[in-house]
Amino acid sequence: MTEQTPLPDHEKPKKWYRVVPDPMVLIFIILVATYLLTFIIPAGEFERITQDGRTVVVPGSFTYLDNVANIPLFNIFVAIPEGLINASRYLFIVFIAGGLFHILQKTGALENVIGVAVNRVGVERRNVIITVGTFIYGFFGIAVGFENNIALVPIAVLIASAIGCSSLVGTTMAVGGIGIGFALSPINPYTVGVAQGIAELPTFSGAWLRTLLVLSSLGLLAAYICKRVVKMEFQEPDNAESLSKHLSEYRLSGRNVLTLIVFVGGLIAMLAGVFTRGWYINEIAGIFLLLAILIGAINGLSANGIAKQMIEGAASVTAGALVIGLAASIQVILEQAVIIDTIVNSLSSLIDGMPSVLSAIMASVVQGVINLFIPSGSGQALVTMPILIPVADLVGMSRQLMITAFQVGDGLTNLIIPTSGGTLAMLALGRVSYAQWLKAILPFMALVYMLAWVGLIVGHLVGY
Image 1 (cartoon, rainbow, N blue to C red):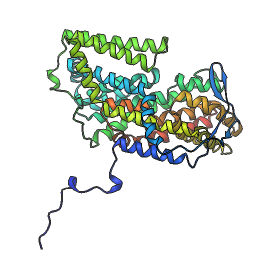
Image 2: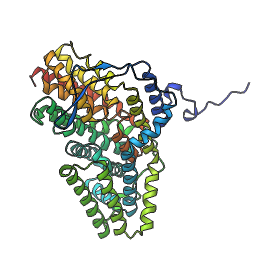
Image 3: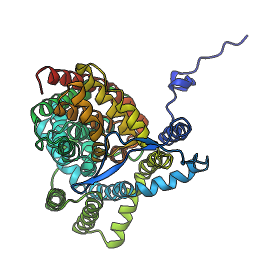
Image 4: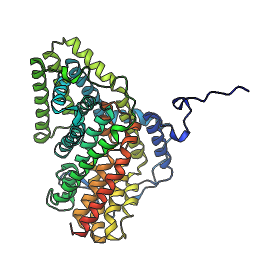
């Protein structure tokens, strides 16, 4: 009897529970599961009124609806193009940003400045570079917002390449830093500002606890990247951005300097528009498109050349952009079934009657689950705060602590939920799939939640 040669480990068939599905498949499974939930969860809604120009929920007004028909099975497939339409602003900013950074990469300006900077600092100080980078991206999350920083992700990928790390390291540094900064920002106008307005508290009051939470969480993220993510196996995609030569060979030309001045000037103009004129995704995408044209012209590209480079850059991020649209279809099914308010009402009732020391932790968990169904931070505040602020009063928890619990639950889950268009857009630009991202970030999520819960308990004990 001939003895068979055992297969190498990489050729052995994987156990079914170790096979990670393609992100498209994973999100489609979630979409089907959401559709099945519509037959279990009854339709219902709150009464809403307009206050100070904003639509808010009337506490205690929830009623079940009897006249909502079941959603036909075919609507699962119709919801996908509808989701693509609803998420179009995220798709287009990914395509345009992909084109912009493709042109920047072709000019060599961005690569040259990163190569020169890392060469001066020293690649052997890798952990210092990762830590500083994480806090810089965290600052952008704190001060600028979440989706507004989408275009900065490829820079972190190039920095990671310069210090000999994978694009997963750069993406974790950027997306994680921006996400943590935005989630726990002491001055977040979308979550803290709206929630404190509903709770009748001074805007951005109680910032000391949120400041401690965000700084300690960014420190934890930097340590996690240095200790774990840099050692993780990661298959670089064929179109991954990377440095093309040795660090000692990098030089900055006059054209490179002019290109970088225009690029940084565009980012400053974008920030000015965000803070003074209320710019959001469409205006930011317009700035990126203008920058792509200007940078292309500075570097001698013809109109046809700019268009060609933009198309090539957009093509490289198509898969990630389509994942965003597919994820948005989940929201379409939830809205058609009119079950979002039912979920909010049921989850909110879990907090009522709990010991006050645990109610803040439970509130953060509840808000994290609700964030899957209402991924907008300000939208979630407008729906849940009118319900949970009275609950906080009843259980003896301060309104300030309830808002921080809301911020923890809403903000941190943005890093992992498939309905967060901004996160998926950043992953697309970092060339990291949703499945690869979950594998890298989930252990950190457990750590940062424990840290945040300790902060909530301490806040309760000191009368925050």
